[in-house]
Length: 327
Image (cartoon, rainbow, N blue to C red):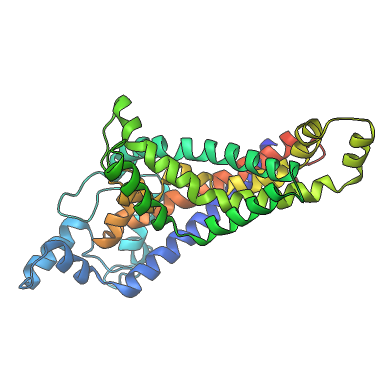
């Protein structure tokens, strides 16, 4: 397994290099350092001297990819791309391009704690609720409960997450005044601010996940080993929990694994609407302000998390099914 992890990590390193290259090229195809300087200085009558000063302070005064003024290897290494890429691969995220020039690494660590407080309960409750809901529908399959359960899933799938947020804020914050409408406080007070985002995030994904898991379980209940279990006289709940559920874990782990990076990166929409100062809000603010240093750092962090999540998912396969071998 160690050999497999090392090999996948090396593949992941190549992916990270490619992602960093494409992010850099795409961003500077649309923007130039001069555009970034004008946006960050924030004035309509910005002089070229002010732009040049900003570029020197932020390290954008060198050529992007190739430095004709230097010789030898310095033609490639004395560029913005090389200097930014080497530091990024060493997990040195540097400082933001905005006026505040905050330490990006410190900001990511601080905001990740906030995002985890939202994303971890959502992830755990999402898996438990979706599996339980799907098993309930399978238990009552071909009945009215199953029919209306599927109809409910389709309806929930058809509704945008924004609708859940607007209705949830109106009912629970405006009408019943149970929770604050937005904002965040640390400590135990965080529960009051995160309860509604967790609930609404759960509801917005329950329809899709429940329908997907129901289809997986229905495929399993038609197999021979399930008929054999029933022929032995096992009760239906025992058949579902002891036989069907363990054999459907691999597709469930695959589905849940794709959501793992969001556990760390947070939910962009929910953090923005509820004013939660996590990584999702950090990314949106950076995109709005064209802060390339933050955008590139967050794309890099997201890629690392995706690679790590797929390695964890592959290892989980061997845990739930000993027949799986990591090659």
